[in-house]
Length: 119
Image: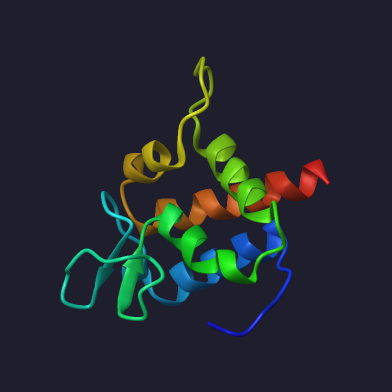
C-alpha cells in the first residue's frame, strides 16, 4: 500500500477498487481477513492476503481523514442495500450477499459514483 495521509472517502473507495481489480483473490467473505495460507487474521496484519469490504476499511483507516472511513462505509452500504428494503443493510450483510469479486468491484464502483453525486 502506498503511503498516504488524509485520504477522502472517494480515495478510499478508489483504493479498494484498485486492489480488487488488480488481484481478484484479495476480496473474501465471512471473515475480515485471511493470510495466504487461508488462516483468519486481523485486517491490519501484514500477512493478510485477502479482506472483506469491512476489512479493507480497517486496513486503510490509518491514512484516512477522520470521518472519511464512515463516509466510505455508508456509501457502500447504501449502494449495496437492495431497492425497496425498509432498512439499510450493514456492510457485513452487503459484503456477504455478493457472489464474486466482480460484484464486489461493481459495488465499490457504484458506491464511488454515488459519493460523487452527493458531493
